[in-house]
Image 1 (cartoon, one colour):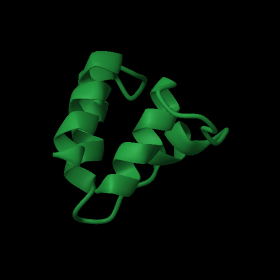
Image 2 (cartoon, one colour):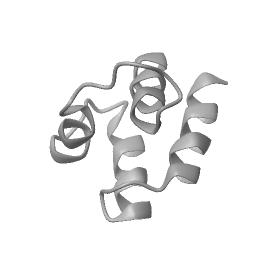
Image 3 (cartoon, helix red, strand yellow):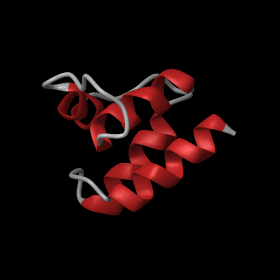
Image 4 (cartoon, helix red, strand yellow):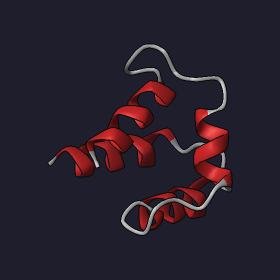
Length: 64
């Protein structure tokens, strides 16, 4: 779960070195069973693009 939080932090700019295709890969490819609910949650919130508030909320949830 921490790996997902770190990837999301890179995407929203709260951490350096976001990979060019990280967000596209995350939204386009079904995740492992334990991560898929989080992927679906973000897809529902911003049409697969980005809802920064939702992403930051998810990061906090994953880190707690």
